[in-house]
Amino acid sequence: MYRKIFILTILCLIIVPFTAASAEYKTGDMEFTLSGSGTSDNSFDNTIFSADIGLGYFYSKYLEGVFRQNVAVVDIPGGSDWNGSTRVGADFNIDLENWRPFLGVTVGYLYGESVEESFIAGPEAGIKAFVNDTTFILISVGYDFLFDKAEEADEAFDDGRFIYNLGIGFKW
Image (cartoon, rainbow, N blue to C red; front, side, top):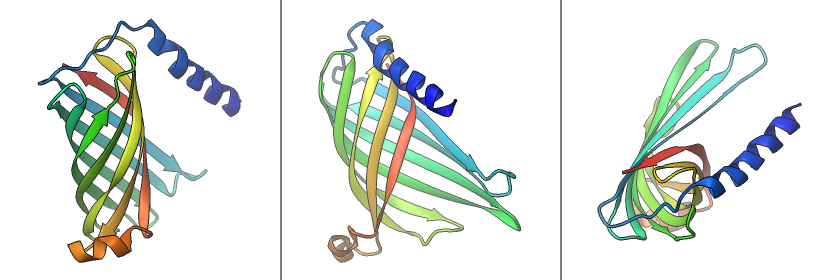
């Protein structure tokens, strides 16, 4: 059952963008993205909710400056904690009509009750699949490595974390 739902979702992500008109970026355009995730065990005792928002500004047709905020709530027996990260960066968008692959880098700060606060930085890649001129589905993956001082960044790359996003975005 779950496999059929997963396959149907992937097919929709592939087919729907072909129905959209060409989604063209230009200097001064902005975009807003929203994504979220969650997990629970079978008795709902260990639950994690996470939400990401992003704001982007296009300095040119291809170069986008980004701001991203993440908040996660971890609810476990005995209490709950929250964590967050704030990142800024730049993405290079590739123009493939309704498909917009992008490559970028971000730098920011990781904080919260159940993580060790530290600076984060790393690469990211993804794709925006437009369903009309202003709305798109966002799929991305990033890798953040954690460090306390700039001179530790080279050595910290192996001790990072992957960030996966599936969400929706709007350009104006």
